[in-house]
Length: 254
Image 1: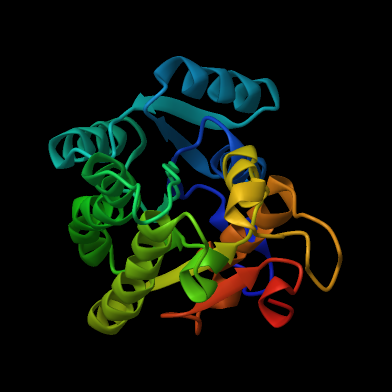
Image 2: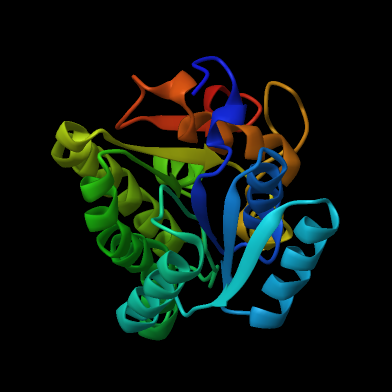
């Protein structure tokens, strides 16, 4: 493998969850363009198949896998299916997400659990599902999507901020435990990249202004995708337990 090129992900089996749209779709397309074999995982199986069609039309290799990431049995079944069809999973991108915004006094228990289940619990389920194969192989890369909200908080999103903060603890602990097996674990922390998060953060009743960044604009999903590919390759072989903010400098102006 070349030490300075993201082309060294060629041939890797890459799982991307929440890959039917937004950041996940952009990441799946980027890995496929670099020669990886991509499992496009999403609750919306038809939408996942559309992404696979797009990848295949460009000459890439991908499969669509329907999965409820909030259900550990569904995750285990999906991981086994992927390994059987593509080979040992070498890269995990745990990215699936939902928002259920409400002020603390109005947030329901259901809204809390839905967000924590899809973000935090699902991240642990996927980690568990792929870790043994990575240990046996002697190499692995795990990349989780956190958020600038984990570091700053966000009015109306106590569930989302707590779940994304939990991912940071998961990443740092997993990095410590798994480093001895040459498994690197990191997180990417974007800000207001997708329609899902922008709708929440630009809602006047929550009083946030995510456009306040050094660059003065939102990011697009395609701008984040190369960071995920970088963290999966050999050029990042000394990077683990890190939270990479890709937010136009938003962390500095909040």
